[in-house]
Length: 356
Image (tube, rainbow, N blue to C red; front, side):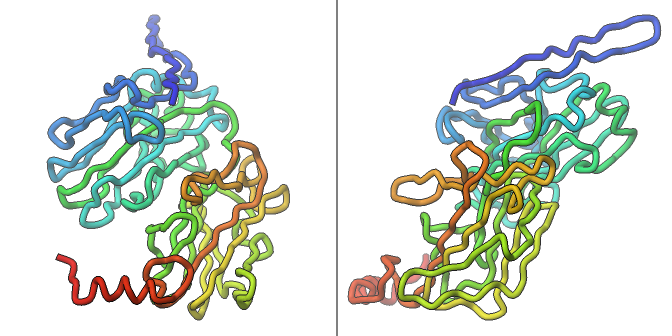
């Protein structure tokens, strides 16, 4: 990944009565240099390192918990100053990853806070990613309605942002390591929405392009979008199909959308057993689209090797349906889409084994 950093020094101009901040321009930190790139943190709370590989594409910030307090990182001067011109016309984007799981989910993880002489506002990016989930991109628009007020006024805050902090404390126990990459302030309208994660039966674990479900069957699917979308709680914007020769799966008995998490939940009253199910998320001007700009979902998957969808979805162009195939087959131990002697052999080779 190329390292784009657009520098806007915070220049403080004094006259007899006023203090001014320089206008902020778009900025991004990738940590591809293997250095902090101006970011700071409390060294008593976290051991912070900058590996050159393992990020979204290149380097990243890696923080390991070393004390019982909060791990928080602070943005450099390139992100500070007068945000007035960016109001309703910019958004923050950051990719986060859990490398070593803590004992639980900590409530303050993902809190992004802007502060200055005129006020303080924060926004909750969401829950920590699962260890198996890889890098997850989070975005939040620079619009007052999306943020929670701590003090002052929105206009007063934007006139001079002097501090930006991001809490990355994911668990209460001192056992975690988390990654941060591609923190950016992006000017203009929000990107076209994409799918950034999918969880089945509340589980973040994925096995390549097909989601293999345990013995409980397919009961609940959560689809997470990169931005606030509309149309994602309308059943006609989803279709449910199966492989040739299999019965058609039923429509879900519940569909809902959580605007805080940008998440659609599909639930079935009875588990779907011993068959596949392909969920198609429909993109289009009257289908699933960005709430703020009506840009259609960028749904095509970029396929990895072996064939599995790499998050986020999309080919970089607005439009395109997204298809996800779920798979449940009792007894398919080696997950080759068939129950046969190979599964019996796998079972026999592990007979009486136990997890240490």
